[in-house]
Length: 134
Ligand code: THU
Image 1 (tube, helix red, strand yellow):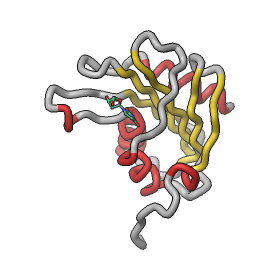
Image 2 (cartoon, helix red, strand yellow):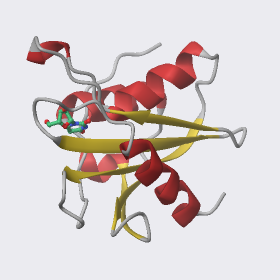
Image 3 (spheres, helix red, strand yellow):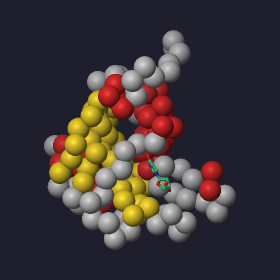
Image 4 (cartoon, rainbow, N blue to C red):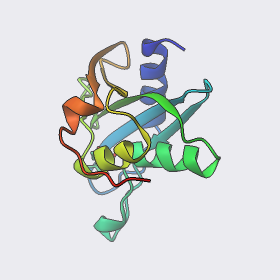
């Protein structure tokens, strides 16, 4: 699985977004250390706070299937009709990523229909993040 293949999967997952309120679609593709990919989209709700972000959809799908070791995640998003498609993970998603991933975990912010990306580490996006000893 190349970085760009993961970005394309995030782009494809974005098509499934359920966004009747914001019209802002997000897709994520999470690569496990065992080589599997779990995708996710944002799923909104009339009670706005019940909305689930694409990244957490992908992570919760994976963890609920017994996967907790992750290599990288690709994320893409944008308003419907905006083909720049860039979306950085929200603070809650950064914290959820940090529950399972090391500081050097790779985060690809995919753009241009999954054909390009900017790369960050979790440490760059969540410096001095909160964690408890397990
Ligand atoms: N959203 C995500 O899915 N992931 C993020 O990291 C940022 C925000 C969603 C939530 C909501 O459905 C829409 O984008 C607009 O905030």
